[in-house]
Length: 389
Image (tube, rainbow, N blue to C red; front, side, top):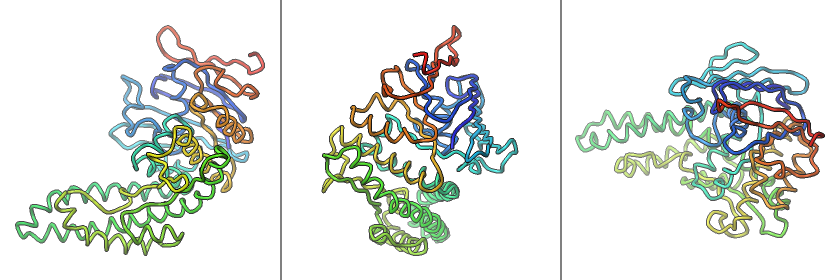
């Protein structure tokens, strides 16, 4: 798979950008603040409907504009697919496939399969559980686009149920059963959607675990062995996940039981205390948790291992995903640079950003695209052939 053409309108710093791309390696070189990362971010958004830098869509819109448009032509096994995405902060995004409108932007998921490496990846190891949940959910969605709908439905249920919990506490003391009866209904919704999300995550973790172990050994052969496991506040869920078993039906029953047992605590605090929104992906090095105990180099190796494992998993299931390397070489030592370069050597398309050419492995045969600034502070593209360097 590769991207043949990319066009941006009012995305981040780009009022307008259109560029033809090719298979192989392409390096976007430019000073910080010139917009090179925005190009990679736009492609990642087309792949996952999310940014690796911000949690909301508003920052993606160029100052003064009402919307942003990301358009890409993706080639997969000789077949071209045009993907157009209109980003509307505060409103539903719109999308088209081969110029035909689709009912939901989620229908473009799967058209572009990509894996992103970025400096922000260190948060996968050192950050809060939300970073690791997002990693799992984004990868699960790239593999199985229907997971996006499950996530959206579950998020809506958590929001509605949280609002009900806040109002139900007072109703309970007044003896008003109607609100509590309604809460029982929302418990059922949370358990049903949450069980499907957990099942997708557990299946993914089971397949990722050996790939993470192999990738970490490649990156840090002298270090301790790496392992991952799915952590849940629901004992049955965690036990089944550890065993590599379990089903959505079993997880649903376990969630309903846990919700019943935690009802008083939830009413007291006014928040949902049970569900996959509180779960985590545990990362271990030897017999210690990576978070809090891994060195800086070990943390980087673990973060890279998670991304490399995702790449290998996607590759095994249906061809090379596009590799997006956002200024990541500048963060790595020579050994980790070389390990990542070895993986990129066989990828169908690799798109890299770098502040200076020296950040790129010297032996790479790569097309270079230099990003410069015009007098009106809008980015423009200047192409330079690799053999002219």
